[in-house]
Image (cartoon, rainbow, N blue to C red):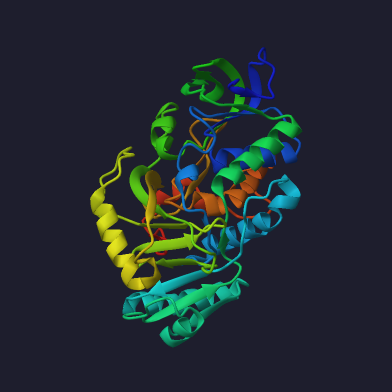
Amino acid sequence: MSNIINVNSNSNQYNVCIIGGGITGTALAYFLCKLGERSVAVFEKSYLSSGSTGRCAGGIRQQWSTRSNVRLAMRSVKLFERFKEDVGMDIEYFQGGYLVLSYDEEEAAQFEKNVQMQKEEGLNVEILSPRQVKEKYPYINTDGLLMATFCQTDGHANPHKAVIGYAQAIRRMGGHIYTHTEVKGIDVQAGKVIGVDTSNGYFKCNVVVNAAGPWSRETSEMVGVDLPTESYRHQIIVTEALENFFPMMAISFSGNFYMRQTQHGQFVLGQGDKDEKPGINYNVTFRFEEELISKMVRTFPFLKNVRMMRHWSGMYNMSPDAQPIIGQSDKVKGYYYAVGYSGHGFMVAPAVGEALAELILFGKSLHTDISYLDVKRFENMTIEKEKNVV
């Protein structure tokens, strides 16, 4: 199979070269093409969605602790709702809601403030008491639960299909995708990007976008720009399939877990690990299985006799405030970045791709403000940390 999708093998020049074939890189390329910029190439060193995107749980959430993130996520949901019609792919998108469970008094108080802010932004979200949770979801053990929040328009989708959908649309519109093509260097002359050196040859370009996920910092070092990101392993377990009865994504930041049921019946569940060290690590551990399974069986007793079928790991590319780093360099002309999603890249990628495409082509974002996500915010010591992270 060719490493090049819909591209003339003699072509070695593009206006925009994007590093990374995950949801961010393909969403950006899609919106560039949609806005009329067809001289676009995506470079992926492995196969499409082989990095963080293809290893995530597929959740799509609008319940955030910062107002700006709520706006970004709400725009992304609007684009996900139109994905099948606009992009042409059924990505198993289902708005079954997000049930956010709190077991901590300080967190519960923060949730009440969050919900007030979210409602001010136009999000249809509600607070549920433990009794209401039990009445609505009798298969959940509510022991120790203080409260929950729920938003029906939150949901989940298949990350692989989303990337493939964007890739097919890019191909139809004339954009180019190179798989199994590693970017080994970014050519900068007189403070301006002029090309990329890859395992498949040299390509001239005017713009380079770093959408390299776990390798974002190393990629940025190619142009001498420091992006304060670090990658941490996160693990996921997948069960055998059951009859569908669990429509929502259940998540708890204080309980440190998340879980959803796929369209095909499997449960996808995971947690964070406070002891995880930074670095690329795709190994899996028995400790993770023991800790997560014992906790999840207590909260979701129906899992007790369900068999575990798969276990994998992926990377959270973390930023200091658990918010993505998106913008353009003021040191190297033509260098842009969309990295550091801190585990939430899939759910906001449509809005980010749209906004960054507008920034590249028009000099400003037209639909969603992403200026607050530029790396320059870390020069200000009063940055607001996103609290709703597992």
